[in-house]
Length: 117
Length: 113
Image 1 (cartoon, each protein chain N blue to C red):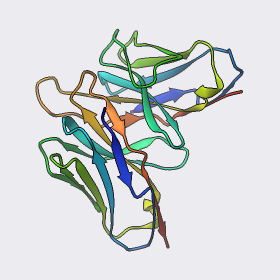
Image 2 (image 1 turned 180 degrees about the vertical axis):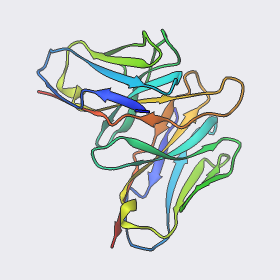
Image 3 (image 1 turned 180 degrees about the horizontal axis):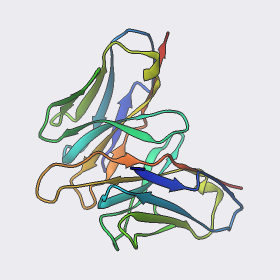
């Protein structure tokens, strides 16, 4: 099992360019998340999805869009990159039991380091 | 809004020492609390998950406790080793739609040989 795989690992963009970050998980998890990690700010939730075809805004959604067309994939798009979006982006997934308090820990990918100049 | 605080921000100890990392949170309506480890340039690795109905969880040399009423958790590391050097983050999963995790900023641990 690969777990959670993020592509690409590194990317440099110029201001105004667009790109898509891909996250794939092979654990059949319902929930998927996109976080960004910045020094002094910790990890902040951008968008998340509770199942195929659903998305919702997190704490810092502006400037980003997401799609979950397949259960195993969660895409994060930057339509017009800005220097403020320079960060390390992490995807994560988890299973959440519907009728009980049981839930699985979050599984994280290794991150995408994005620099916007 | 849930806020998670970790103290201390950094900790340096000699090898073999037992140590405690602290985490506090403001909203006790949580599904669970999770402790993660992050090595430089890497993603987060889950260490322990404590469900809201539990008081503690153990894995090897690690023991995590949860006091939901006071909004506190501790991560106890026994007989620390240089390989334990990493940043340790705690996060709480809230009982809201999507069950979002809110993270603390972490404690950077250095274990000196």
